[in-house]
Image (cartoon, rainbow, N blue to C red; front, side, top):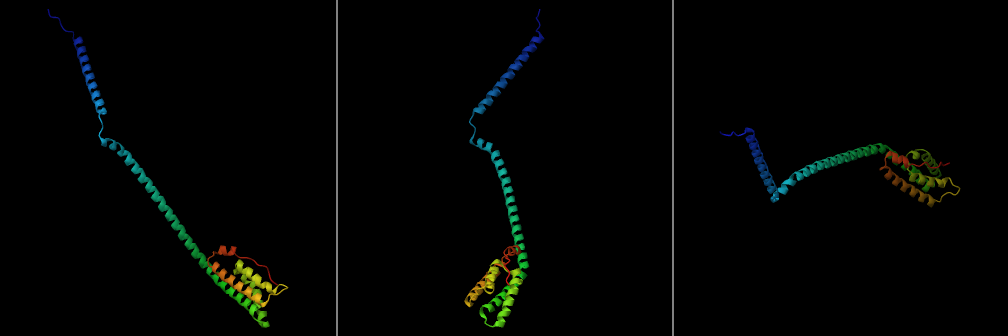
Length: 209
């Protein structure tokens, strides 16, 4: 009589054998991976690892350089616009001041001519007319166009005719020369001034007789 094989036992042994074989394969794979990891890597493998880092840094540097160039160009454009605006403003100021300069020059020459007669002439009629012209300019047109230095020189010259101790002929000529020098400097300075600067440089001198 033949004894039969239990099919359940046979299947269980087959499963155990398959699991054992699977474990052996996994162990071999793991040993292979460990062995591969322990092997010395070629020199270029490190370089290949830092290539992405270098690429990223280059991209960031390029981006920052672009921002810098844009900012620098914007600054240059702003400065160029400001310089152009300043030049236009200065040109406008000069055009506005030109009639003022012409009037200043004419008034200075008239005042200097009257002062010259007073310092050099002995003709009573001319002296009387020159003194009248001087004081009319002193209290009139000169107020509008003179700067502080000219105002002081006008006061100094006019004092020769208002004080109890009149100036000598030599003293008059000295003050006349000083007045001429101050007028020359004033015209040169006014040519470089804006109207606001000119107004700030004016001085209201004391009244004469």
